[in-house]
Length: 160
Image (cartoon, rainbow, N blue to C red; front, side, top):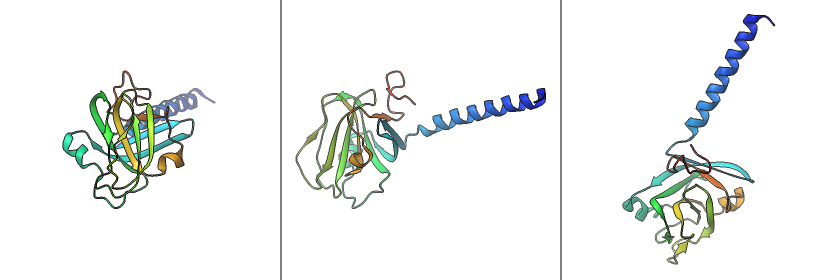
C-alpha cells in the first residue's frame, strides 16, 4: 500500500473512531436511560419526573405503556422514598437506584391500585418505573447500572 493509501486508511480510522465516540455521547439523553449488567444491556425511552407535581402524578390513569417506555423519578439528594399504586392502572416494576446509578433494589410487578407503600432502601436518588415483568424478563437486578445525565459524571458507575 502506498503512502497515499495508508494516509486514507488512517484518516478513515480516525473518522470512524470519532463518529463512534460521538454516537456514544449522543446516546446519553434526557429522554432515555440505558441499563447494563451481566445479563446484557437495554434502554428505555422515558419521561423524567423531577419535581413534586410530576412525581405525585407519576404514571397514574394510564391504561397502557409501550414496552420500551418508562418514567424516571429523580430526587435532589439520596433518601428513603416510597411509592404506591394509587390510580395506577398497569402493573409496574420499580427499579431503585443509588447516586452512582447502581440498582439497589427491584420491586417486581407492583399491583395496580394497591395503596401499600413500596420502599427500596435508604440511599435512593432515582427510581425507574417500567412495565411489570420487564425487569425479570431482561434480567435487571441489584448491581445493574443505569446511565442517564441526571447522575453526576464524577461519581457515576457508568457516566455519560
